[in-house]
Structure formats: structure tokens, C-alpha cells
Length: 89
Image (cartoon, rainbow, N blue to C red; front, side, top):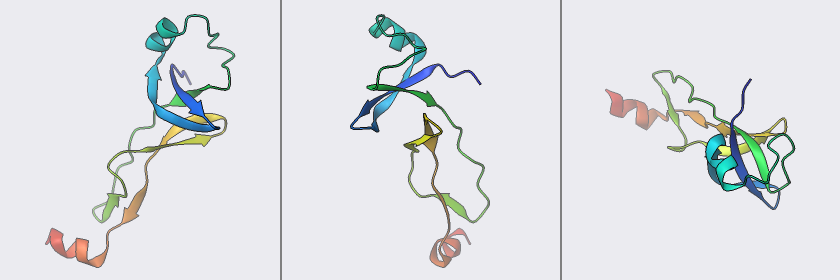
């Protein structure tokens, strides 16, 4: 798995939005991408899941969370309420 994105970390949590690898290296050429300081983390872009007919995203955009030492997109999906299902008809 090739990860060429990074994200800032503040107080141990992802902060802001991911940075493409080329932009990261151009902005901070002094940082060794193989050994990041605690102010940065590797970021893995995760595509949104395919939804069933009666599912929706809880938020329009993913949130960023730590998973196995890497920050990833997390897509929160929920089942539609009965009211939401009725609006489909």
C-alpha cells in the first residue's frame, strides 16, 4: 500500500485536511517522510462505501480518525428512518 498523503496533528488528533505528498515535501523539505515528527501523520484516502437503497451518509464528508497508526477517512453510514424511506416513494 503506497501512502503519499500526510495530515497535521495537534494535541494527538488530526487537524485540517490532508496534504498531497509532493506538496508536503515542497513545503517542508527538511522533514524525512520516512520518520515523521509528531506534528504530522500519514494519511490514507478511503473511498466512500457503496450504499444500499435505504442507507445514507450521516455527514456529507468523511471524518478523519486514527486507524493502526495512520489517519484515514471514516465514512459514517446509517440506515434511513421510516420517514426518510417514505420520502423516496
